[in-house]
Length: 221
Image (cartoon, rainbow, N blue to C red; front, side):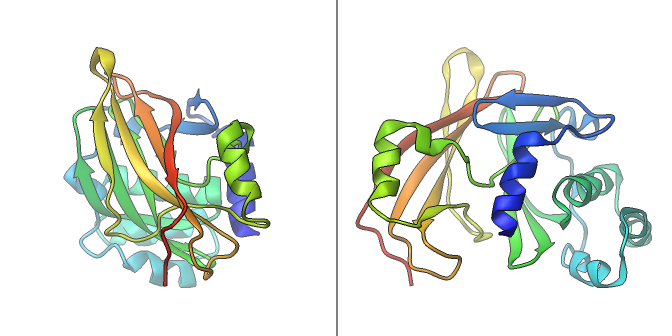
């Protein structure tokens, strides 16, 4: 249910005071603090502190106050506001993987049964969470795949060591390709894997997603 909630919020939310940039099935939130890229101060010395803060704080203001005491910089604070206000989930960036037009970051997230998640942050300040691209079933060959597994849905990668690929696009853009599992529940085995590309232009603005292909024989523990 929480994943469905995240997906609905992702489609419909307009973050007060900040611009949004729509990219196909997924919507990016533009955070001005991240214009130019993710800096070292975006990562806390101990990102797991966000779990302890979550236990102590009922409000966003409380979270921000505790993070300031922990030495959080402007980008770390902006990211915490974003995850708290948009997803009702406390978040802190734990790792940064820098690339030419956008950075892939893994964040510790306190959100029910989800303890971590991947985000892409473009040089424009566009922040894209890797929650399920909810309209993928509108693409015929993927709709057929999902029908082969009744009750299954797409699940984002949650492993902090998840591998992803980066491809150069025409006119200076880049595509970040992550594998999404097709399964029936959080702890269920993976029935299939769908590779999805997240595209950014040369300025680091998010432009949309591109399904790349799928595997039907991969299994998970």
